[in-house]
Amino acid sequence: MADALIQRREFPQELTFLGDGAELWRAVTEDTGSTRFSRPRASDLLLEEHVPQLLGLLPPGPVPVLDLGPGTGRPAEGLLTGLLAAGRFGGYHAIDISPELLAMTAARLSRAFPAEAGRMTFTHGDFRETVPAGGARLVLLTGGTLFNAADPGLLLRHLAAHLGPGDLLVITARFDTLGRAPFRAIEAAPPLPPSHRLGLDLLNIDPDWYDPERGFDPARHEVWSGARLNRPVTLHLDGAHGRRAVDLHTGDLLRLYWQLFLDRTAVDALLHGAGLRTSLFQIGRVSDVAMIVSSSDITGTQGTNMTKR
Ligand SMILES: C[S@@+](CC[C@H](N)C(=O)[O-])C[C@H]1O[C@@H](n2cnc3c(N)ncnc32)[C@H](O)[C@@H]1O
Image 1 (cartoon, protein in one colour):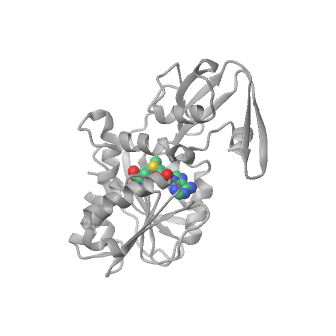
Image 2 (cartoon, helix red, strand yellow):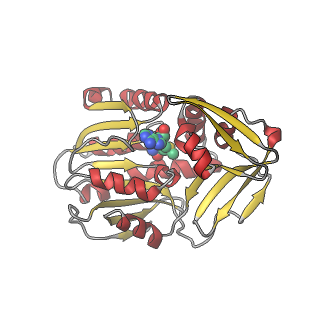
Image 3 (spheres, helix red, strand yellow):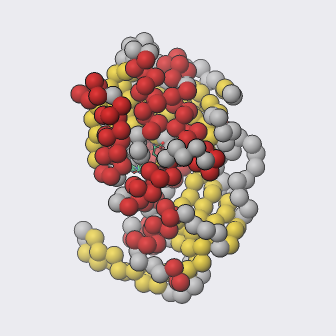
């Protein structure tokens, strides 16, 4: 936390899923039927609606699923339904940094598939540290998790190093499929959603001490929101290695949320830089939500395919 604040003026996004943040994410991804929530739902549907395409990229036989950051388990539930219907379910293992979200996934999937409880495992952990070995699996990194990472390229290189023979890395996120930015360059005083404000609340930064901003950074291809400090603030953070002071200054922008918003060419380049090769780019029901499937350049044997609904 202190390093992210001192070096990059960022609140680490993975921490926003812990504690109260888990309930905020659940609320955002809940299916309310409202169009405001259509993007998370469209992202959930990508897996379940394209099980045949995913199976077409795998060798015959049972398919193990490794879910990196399952959130509430919604996308996994749809996928598992399809794999079971096709007689191809080969077990499910989820790893999440948030014990609260992991518990939600476990509850959802145990309720949906009681007969498979013995073939599902749930591990509290950080996938930047440990990724179990395997092969011919579906390795899920869905719902924008990749593009929230502090360094998506580094995360991809780490995951690529842990992919086994025939493993497919399945990423879902918002992509720039229409060639236009989602926001203006800078929008002053926008309402920040509670999940973006969570970091400020955890740091005990009073709402009077900052002005919210959000925008789109065309150089970084990134949607972001943040807090522009209107006074100096010193934070004292207690951790395993003692107390650290973080000095923030008037005018500093504290980044709270960011998400890369790449087009197809840029995402292919990012994957390629990590030693991965695109097997499928599937646009979803909402045109800026897509699933991209890739495999290791060394182990992958599939051809490239571009599909649009
Ligand atoms: C944006 S949500 C996506 C949830 C789900 N995959 C979906 O598609 O709805 C990110 C998820 O990844 C988890 N997460 C983020 N960084 C993580 C890390 N380094 N290790 C393990 N889990 C992480 C979060 O706790 C959260 O469950």
